[in-house]
Image 1 (cartoon, helix red, strand yellow):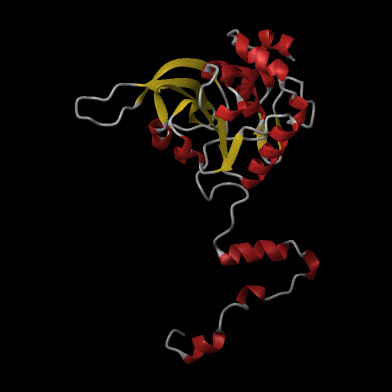
Image 2 (tube, rainbow, N blue to C red):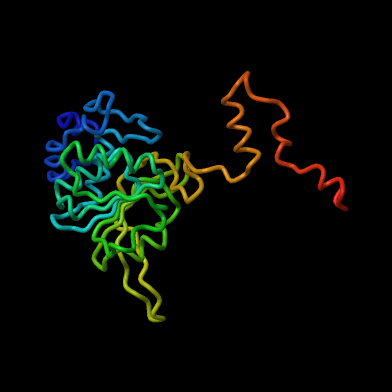
Amino acid sequence: MLDALEYALDRAPDERVLAAMAAVPRHEFVAESPYANREGEQGGTRVLSPATAARVLSALSADPGDRTLVVGAGVGYTPAVIAETVGAEHVHAVDISREMVYEARANLAAADYGGVLVDRRDGSDGLPEYAPFDRVLVEAAAVDPPRALVGQLAPDGRLVMPRGRGAEQTLVAFEPEDSDDTGDAAGVRAVDEFGPVAFRPLLVEGEQADAGVRNRTEREDAEFARQGYFAPTGWEHEWIDWDDRLRGTDR
């Protein structure tokens, strides 16, 4: 797997990243062809190919001891590779999907990286309880870095994310810029680009696949559809109190 990376990447990956990837048992995280250089789907999330993972982690350029936040825990592989460099106790990961949080925790524990903290959060909100972070990796695309994540970045930190929409995405590294004369909070500036990528968009609360359906009709429609032939008819009107409606003025 590692030998193939030099042919798949335009820029040589960081040697520390390669060493970390060599140490992490990828088969504990990826069920199908774990060492093939290809992406896949697992548990409703996208699994990065080894080449893409190497490119993203090289862009992050984490050092030992760096407090790191990963937005988009996925199956847990990326946090595990980072943990090999910075130490598991310094890695924090969040995911908007509760199912992926459970899977990432289980995979990390099986691979002996149980010290990585994984929590269910809206990734755009970050993890303020553990800020500031020396490194922030966002494994989802957005037009600009979310303001909350910028605010949780250490003064000499680095944030890496896919910037853009749809097919027009570029992997970009950002670093803080100094506050201006008005005293506004420091922002970030793009310091390097690492080529085109194709990530799913950063979701906000309610957009995730396992989110509850707030509209009762839509929710019950799906529930009855799963019953198939045995679903009763006329169910969509059962919750309406027709007698009260007819006796009242709202006819």
